Length: 118
Image 1 (cartoon, rainbow, N blue to C red):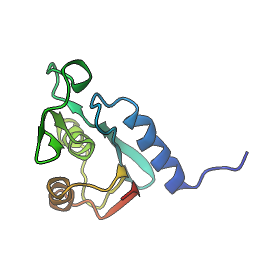
Image 2: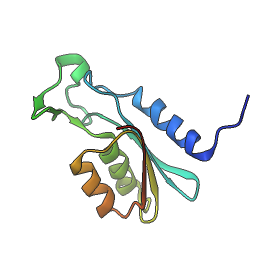
Image 3: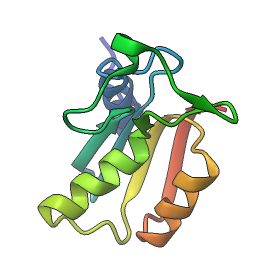
Image 4: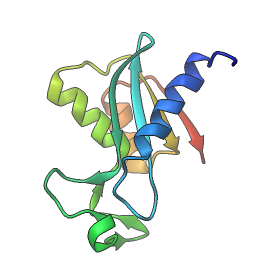
């Protein structure tokens, strides 16, 4: 078996995280990496203790499910919650980030974005 490159490894982690998604419409995973170390991961899903799309369906406004927090935001918030700096980090996402997530990625200092699906 051929060894995965670092990019393949981190993207594979994002795909694994996506399998935890609670949104029926789209499963997305994100992994934040600094110095080739995973510092956070996230998937799109409801807020802690909230209703899941898998239980009650997606709540769509303008084509986006507003019941969920996006994977990128969940990963960034995990960094904030546990004190992991994001400046200079990279993020690997299964899908191209939306405008709001792009703004958060830029604002928190993440330097590179890698995505699998446009």
